Length: 505
Image (cartoon, rainbow, N blue to C red; front, side, top):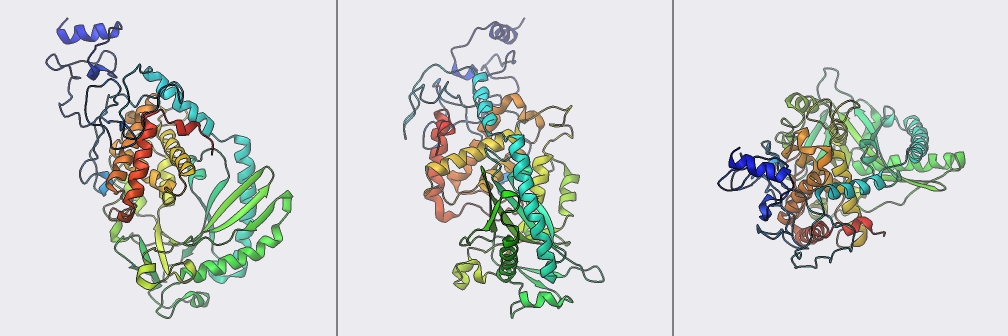
């Protein structure tokens, strides 16, 4: 038996090296006799991820037994920037250690380094995260009752909308959001429903809509008809310059919904109301109450047009290594979706500060995001009944729950963050680690740490590119202080066993 084999055998018999770098290695891993590294690993260890030490910047490399593994720097121009990231080698470094219970070890204060101490076994980390996930799982009975109520209300609304407005006569109901992606957490109390209006093509099959960018993000557009629409009903929604007014269409939809809601109140013992407008929000929000259930439904007006995706999307959706080239091509052949959404820059350009005079529409890819999250495996059998299971959805749920809890704790400081930020970071992580083996179910703690590490890095750089539109940065440079604040809070949670997971707000 050579030196490397002897050391591996001793490790399997339970002998633990005193060198911190040997911790977290898999049993029996072959090591280089010269430096003690796992055979095949380079000295830079670029594939490993380090957990931030404190409620501050990530820790630098060191030999302290309390420090977590090194952070993986996203490749320059990689997934976060819109360009395709090469498959990263699987890191064998352990994930951040979670204490036995919140408060069982002294918390790491802001700006301090975790003191050396006994570390729990790696299996305990994933076990505690799985316990958190189990608490977030929705009860089947609650889901069934909530979805039934929502479907009954929306079905009646859609029929009324079709009958009362000719432009809405072909409207389709399409589900969106975390509930339908099966990553909803805690309670089935929020639903997103897209009311989609298909735009018919011209008689010769040509595209009817003209899209003009409203700014340099590549996400917001002014919409107009290339020719005067045959359907006279569209004319009342056109501005003098020919632009299709998002605000006028939303108001017409809201008026119909408010009128119809009066007819469905107190049906089946439930109360349905229309919430007041939210500044800058395009959604029409319904409140459905049937004790003990209280459900919020966001209705989003959407246009659907069968035409080529805009040039701003060309370098996005880099899923070739993850879901395959054919899947990407199929996605890009689907229709484009445009939701009525005010561009915040309109306030600067036109003085408009609310949706009442907004004419902009934003590209939406929620239907594709739902497909990717539902069919998320690099292999076709991932998470099927007889196939191997992965922890991708579990990581996304934990990311969403972490942000949700921190927003409850710091509502003012984190008001500009939403679940779409962590969802985008998660999709980029799926590209950076494309293989199902990178998300093995038993490595939940490690995979969650990788996602968090990438998100923290984005926060520190104030750079989180839209997954489909690489030139669109979801983190405004004007909010760097907020980004760094969230980065520090996530770092603190990571170093102290996620105490916020066990707090109630």
